[in-house]
Length: 358
Image (tube, rainbow, N blue to C red):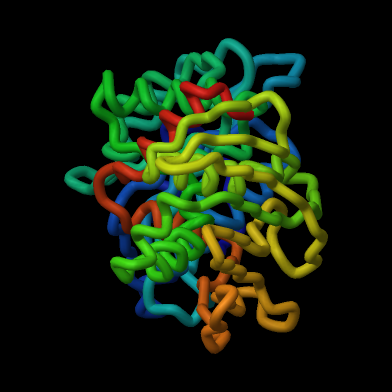
């Protein structure tokens, strides 16, 4: 990344051209597959959000427009800066523009009009909204109206049912494509469970599930403190797909649900894993009739799980399943690659909204 250069808002494009003049002589190519708008309030999470944006640029060169609001500033201001990001390493032949906008107070209303001339025409626009969308903000509507796809991170919310309700309204009432970084972080586990129950005899066994248990990482950081969300997503996803009814929702982390044939006792537990991201699901435990399924991450290969499936009469050979790397930013990469809105995700959100699961 080139050093940031503070510029007058009217000089953004001119200053970017100046930066590119020497880079062009080094055979660097200016590349952009889409526009990525990022909004966040300056906080301990800002550096984390910048890191995940850098991961996106490594995979997909794009023009990034990073908006940071200082809600604690004692004065109004609007500051802009420009730089060039190099995907992966400076020797990469491709590079892309980054425009930073710092804003506070009454100057917030100027941001959409400042942003508009710097969106690359005829390219998709993605908005990563780094705050809780269920909390009103003057920039949310004008920025979302520019975007082809809205991407959120449920880690930003203190009220998961309200978060779910807002996203459902955005999709069902306003027609937005929506995505969620925490949902993407559960993809490996969802794929594993789908593959385990793919055989017809096991699909039938789903109706007799009697207990479900998830264990997630209890390690907190400055950027992550809502650690049970990924486990709640998996539980609500199962409930949605299997049409379970919630009998108790006020005794978290213990829940009772009504399955097709019997009650299901569910629980969410914690363990500490230093190499995993906060809240990352560590293991899944399912029991039905005389069968038991257990999958847990390996301590020395945390992106790989050991899968065990047994019954009172037999025990399948354990095998390893690769969940995929959990590197910072990969969830955003996945959600940018995805088109439309997952029907499974919408079903899961309805469970969270309707049962007021927190």
